[in-house]
Image (cartoon, rainbow, N blue to C red; front, side, top):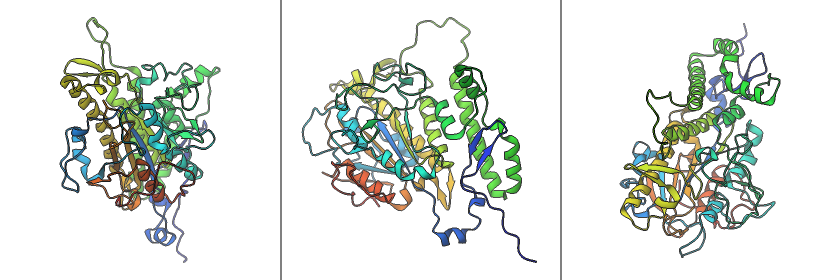
Length: 458
């Protein structure tokens, strides 16, 4: 009797509900029935990229480690990396361009961070995320995510959402007007808006729900309030019956993770329950849910990578001249206006250090979540390159040399984390070229400021 053919599942399979809802699946063993066949075909997990923006520079002597190599000691600002130190490569000595003087601009640094280009040329300039997105878009549902957490866009007059569509409103001024402090990504010279609404992100990634309400407002509300998973429970159970034990557990964990993200979004929208006493004065400072909000955006990136809905994401932890308020030791500080321009005032320096630790903590959260997802013989983090940097180096000097740069992940073996590496005189764009090289994507016209891939990263 001939041996029966193993049941197989397409990598592009979706769970579909009766009303037209669709949900992408994570990688399952049934999509690659045997390790031998996968090895024979050269199948490996795909690479992914994250560009993460640290707002308004750092306090250099509290950021950069004193020694190179794996035995370096974490500095006060990098202390949130303690649990992921072995997964992070700290780089120092890098420049954005060839300049040796102070008083470069926030906006100029933001433009250069992911483009390695001093000027944005209409019809030509791309940020690295869009170069990778263009090369991988045929394999995913969403070419790239461009995300921001600037307090829902309403604390900065240049970053608002007047029509409530979940996107920062695009600016209408020229490409190089030095006023664009909310956007780091460019496609052929055009700024791309950041998405700040987790619901919009979730629907783009995981759901394609048919609208049922008679009005646009009711359709949006209906989409938001109906759980994607509730509409697919039956099909999910039928699929689990066909899977092996490992796939069944993996699918269950995947669906549970999506449910947790949905619940987190619902809780964030509902807000905290009313206090049983008068509210008193309106609070000042960063809202309590700010950390949960930023972490949620990180979780959505991880989940989008896990199900291969996209392979590219950027996340801004604030605009480059962010007016976001942080409360430190009982006092509220505007990030850009007071803390970053500290003038060596000890109280303001302490505030800037606390704000920077908060930002690095969000980076650490992303790394932890990526590492927690099994993939192939390792974890999702093994196949990701996370590039974390800022618009300036010294927050009070506005210089574009000795830039703060962190790399996380292994990019399929192209990166060797767990150490501090000095790259004196090299450029941030060289790091970006190394990432493109890991993706096997030709440079083309990308990054005129970059001199060549940075040696020593692997």
